[in-house]
Length: 273
Length: 252
Image 1 (spheres, rainbow over the protein chains, first blue to last red):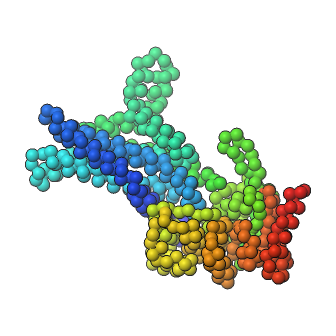
Image 2: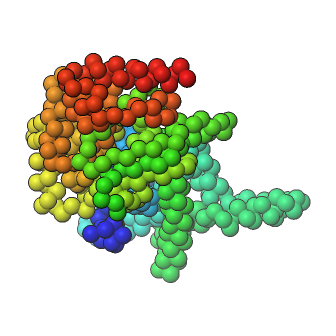
Image 3: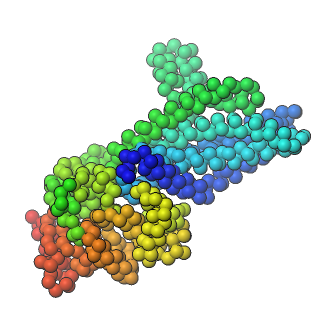
């Protein structure tokens, strides 16, 4: 069956994804980050106990921030090393001397890392749900259900943001060194969060060029601050319509797809000296 | 596809450009070379002669600046060609956390081999390269250089390729390892595989190859049958031939 066959292509992508997943999930350094997130979440229980009646809110806020932060660090460093490690160890020679195209490789690497990050995020989310349950006076099944409903949907929105970070990191890793990839990815992540503030600053400023620039940046980069606002709304049990969730999911997926296509194009043009 | 030539390079030229100063260095110049099917060809040359660059162009890891490289009638790097070749990189270093068996299954999946075929093929090849079951189930991060080389050879054979491209297959192996690789090469010759490899080890090249080519400063300076270089089977004649070819071109 030629590689042009969709089934063969999917098999190759799955093989690369499984390979990447195994390599990433077996890297012990990952677990130190996850442990860190668990500790932060546990500490947030202590912080909550110091507050007046806001312990549940503080626990969820701090816990979710820890998941977002630790997940982001893992996505950033694993993503920027995704292609670089293969180049450094020359394992990429074994891959690109097989009948594959750049997009098979990029899709496989991205899916493998995303699956690993999803596992980590779900584990951290379940742990946070457990802490929230401990915080309730009632520990029944209904309380567990309530804890899961309040924690897991915002956690999945964290994962959506992390998909974007992985995609940016993957793109930069196809041509930049790990250090530069980290800097570029971090910069875009920050600008994504501050884009709206930057645009407002541009509108307030007297400088027309800056106002235009900030407008362009706002429209090019995804609005990660908006994603955070929706996440907070979900966490505080404010109604968020399914249409908004669907829109935001498609929004992030569109960005991810564009970045992966660009990464594939760069990979296809690369030479391996 | 032509019936005769397994590998054909015509006027193959390669310039490397340094990323910062954009300085061009010509590493391969007007290489014309034809390797016939079922032939075992050894490419020799001093360090930096362009042997690995030549190999990388044939397996599609690099593109020529000028000229053409064909593998089994298809352009080098074309998926049609890649599906029928096996490649062993120099000093292979694979994934630290995967076991040898998992890695073999991964490579087999890239060729689209079915699960049942994959399992049998992997076991057969691991046995061929003398990697025990226990070793095959260890993470590759714990492998010795010799074990990595054996695994590298095994993965290059997974798709039962028509042509093998091996870069320094004996590199870093002890005498037992080299003997085993020579035995594998002999078996592959009997199976009528076309084998193209780079090596510095003249005794092994002398024993295994049908023909050799000598590269120096990116140019093919000599190509001859082993039987024409030495009838006695002693590698000294090959060594003399090599030194003469390299020294002559260095002086001109």
